[in-house]
Image (cartoon, rainbow over all chains, first blue to last red; front, side, top):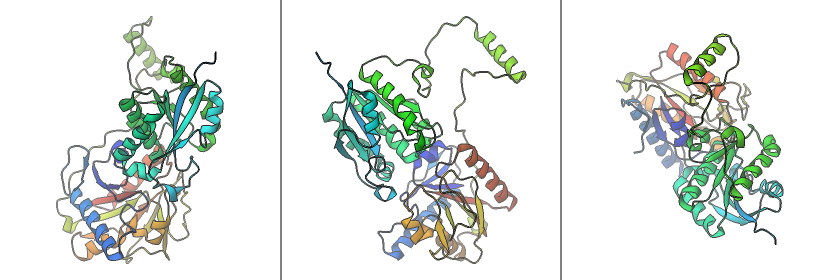
Length: 66
Length: 351
């Protein structure tokens, strides 16, 4: 499981092992300031990052920043 | 001769400072003169001995998304008031607000050497993060507990303001910080442990001397070997549900989770889906639910072969003041269903 979470400290506290920081609380996988196509690109990239995290072996809690 | 009043600065979020609700959760830190909102009954409880000279305010989203900057601004703004005590909250179950309270108190204590105290419910995720550094007073799990929390907070603030020593957690009413204080007792540890075990075996009540922490370490699952043939499922605590919330998942303190079929759905649109989560500004999620449950992105990655399949069903609950017990129950049940369906991986999204 990869946790795409807006608040990383909470994700760490509850024991998530693969954490992907999200954009913002009301739109974790979006950005209403961006034009639609750029927003979709942003979302696609964030989801791809989560999928990459699923393919990495982890021993301990890991935040996948970049 | 009148004694000099001890000075207090109070921290509140945008809601309790009466600035606005979720739509104002982005406001950057600002400081107001005197007491505001719950600071007013707090001031009344402090009486003539102490004075709330200022109230520090920050939007919950701004704080949670910019902790370092926010904390710097708090320290900077509080310092000139030279308070004798810094008090934050009460935050009750609010996770972001709890973090803001804990982080502010921690910074003010470390950087300015000022005694601090905050208050929240025992299941607030911020408690585990800050209980060791900061005094945290227990509250109930809803704003209805404000009336009874204020006098207890005032009592603690008063002790700090008058420079009195804080006693043990059970004496002064705060969450144990995990600090060991040596005490002499009449029975040895061996005797106390055996007595406890006998009570446990007799199903009689007993008091542990060392409670285990609330959140457990979760062993990490193995990595996915072949994503191109994997089935990935989406799960969210962000409350994305079909329009009308047919299963009536509650906006807070959810008593259930639901599953919805998304076979053939390529995109979540406002005419068919919405959020039912009461803990964040719903505007953006309602305008485009993919912003919380990224169905469009996953479908596109399925179509181009990046993943083998997007699981036909997604699971949803509302992660707003969800009890730990329920959250664990839902998680376990969802995991069991996904495992039975041979799903290879999950993306869980949270707001």
